[in-house]
Length: 271
Image (cartoon, rainbow, N blue to C red; front, side, top):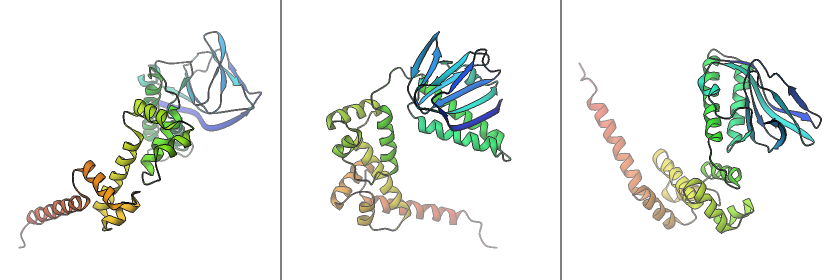
């Protein structure tokens, strides 16, 4: 069971901001920082970077303050009897989030569900909190952090969302202010695949969708998926999908016709 007492996101404070509750709250407090901040951890005031999360248990000492011209965070004060909250291995100590935008979006959704409740808001809030704490558990369980991880993750999301873009290794490296060689080594180490393999996979998935659900000519599909050369598109498509674009579409059409045929055969005979 979870009960949100108060929640908000993107709260901005001045450089003089200090939050000091020696005896802690009588509920849980979860923060997601958007700017660097000072936190009292293990008897010492330490500076932590932006894009950190920190969970304070009930009655745990809370002290944090701004360390720049402004301090900004998302926060939620809540009651919970869920073990996924109480067993989070890191409590009272900020830890970096590899995908802070994802967590920030969950804070926004939780805020809207809490402040503008609907018929299923209680269930929705529970599910959103479960997802949020799953992401937090993944983040605090990371054994090591890679340089430029966050920037690479944002770029990978953009590749998946717009694979038809003009993606080349030199352009990607320039965007991240890295050398082409270092980008490729780092990308492969973090994600287990190369940046151009991600581009190709994204383009072929888009092409499969276009071939299945539109009647566009193959040449138009190729162009919309980021290929200026039709032969190059056909070669990459067959290498990835196992069939040429034309054969892929024909196979899909045949499967649909077979389905329709069986559907008709199963219909009861006319009386």
